[in-house]
Amino acid sequence: MAKVKLEKFIEQIEARNNDNTFCQKAVVGLSTQKELITTKADLEDVAMTSYKLFPPHHFAYVPDTSRRGEKISLGYNLTENTCMVSSISIVFKVKDEADLLPDYLYMYFNRPEFDRYARFNSWGSARETFSWADMCDMEIDLSSMPEQEKVVAIYNAMKKNQESYEGGLEDLKLTCDAYIEELRRNMPSKEIGKYIEPVTENNTDKKVTNVMGVKSSSKFMKTKANMAGIDISNYTVVSTDDFAYNPSRINLGSIALFGKGNCVVSPMYNVFRIINKEELLPEYLMMWLSRKEFHRYTWFFAVGSVRDTFDFNLMKEVKIPIPKKEIQEAIVNMYTAYLVRRELNEELKKLLKEICPILIKGSRKSA
Image 1 (cartoon, rainbow, N blue to C red):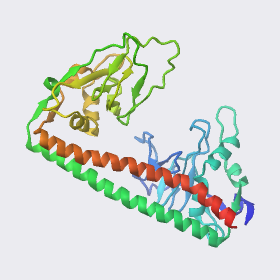
Image 2 (image 1 turned 60 degrees about the horizontal axis):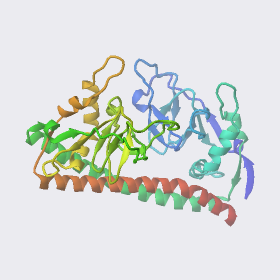
Image 3 (image 1 turned 90 degrees about the vertical axis):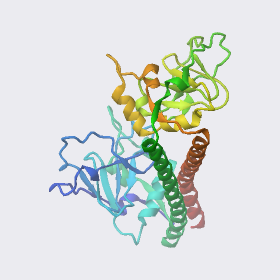
Image 4 (image 1 turned 30 degrees about the vertical axis):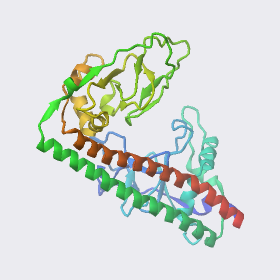
């Protein structure tokens, strides 16, 4: 076991897309979760020649750490294809895998200790960065090759299981989508206006103190607003199986179905409920309202001068197929199984992150 500087094992790669071999589809983003993601940049009319090549089994990271929640955006290309990253990113690789396994280094980067180190050692005035020199200057506890191979094998086995589970999850999602599309094609759609009614109950007596908002992932969350000194008597009360949505952000997915109990939401939210649950199940309606097709629909029909909004009158004009209750229940059960498994898959991915520092620590103790 030896504590050595990382510069001994890594080298920077500066290859660019000079000949335009790769197009916009090859561009990826780097997340603070240390994963490759779909880029959020607007690439329309952007020249691709300055973008850096990101080959398989290479690393890339964004030096800026001051605007990323105390974390560093980094990725390891585990695909078989060469990707591209922004010119501000730094691409590097392990020089000799006989000394340091790239997978072992990736596990090292996945530890919260690395994020804390990178943030602490970031420098700058307007923007703090963790430079290439800082990366090379970082010391790591290098285990022997047998120890590296052992912990990497454990990690990869767990990752393979998670990916296998995720593959089955996507098959279930595909089945749900196919069922929904079949309904849409074979049944006449009806406006939901006659099935829903607005909720206008205000928190006049201030008995409900649970202030919530709605995330773009179609879930309720604790409000992020500073509630100090705020009068919540005019906030709208949301009860079991009520819907709430932000009329200015519904196109991003800010609509959710509340579970059991009560909460209050800002007066800017629209709240409604289903009149007769024997005709239309709340979960069935929520399944339709959480689809990306619906988000695009709201963006297209939203109106306004300063800010486009999708008000309750526009919501009542939304059309969906409404089959018998038994069919709705069957589809909801299938979709609920998908949601439960999706949550479990997220927990498995979280566990993979948490196991990295444990395995690294185990290799240290063993050494």
